[in-house]
Image: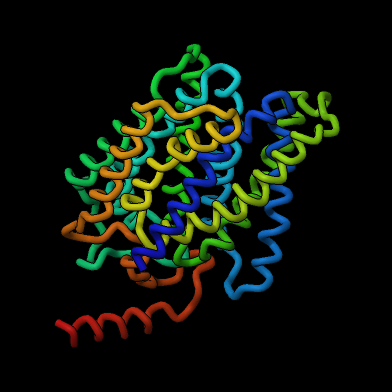
Length: 344
């Protein structure tokens, strides 16, 4: 389970890292329009996978969370990335987004307990110790996250950025963090395919409306060959493949462990830039790669005491009817209570 999750998360972050050099081809194309087209293609492909898999449609509260995920982790993140690349070097952007492991290590356990007590969807969750509650971030995990971030700074090295570029990069960092935090509570109920499909589908109208409001649609044109290839790569490889890999790994590892793999993002970006631009990495970047690997390995080796942060370890505990929640929750709860009594 853990090794599969690690492979999935590593694959997703590698794809995301190599997408930054590719995204440079779209800096001259209307941003909102290009992202709407990208997610429209991805949503169509993911819809075909949804029809082939068993599952259910999201409930109303889950739809609201998915809409927030689409607005922040998808639409806003990519708008910020493309805007940041116009005002900052890719090295600066990668360094700022490289703070993701540290933020997820801190926010993951805190919000896991918080959402257990406030999530009012069809299923409420409790930790294995019973009543939901907030956990303190693990000092060891936070320390490993800090090591990963330090390695990222070495990998990316210096770089130039204006004040606007830094602001856009910070916006991209927030979107990257929310991409995991908002999706984590939904993965057990809906699965990676449906979470990805609904998020992409909900992002399309948001981006289309934004293009109309800002007047960007007046600049709509047929993409060049390079822009078309970049759009297809972002839609098929970065969105469909990477989303399914990341959410599959996130479901297995939990937010804290999965977040460590964001440290691979700048390493992959460095490798992709070296291949596309035909430049050799600096010695400091190679040293940073080793530091990232050390922090990542140490973070994955940590076993946390107390309630687990992983989505799979948090068993769903049905409650009484709330809005559109399914019936029959009480007998299931009684059966589980009896099982816990016998095991005690």
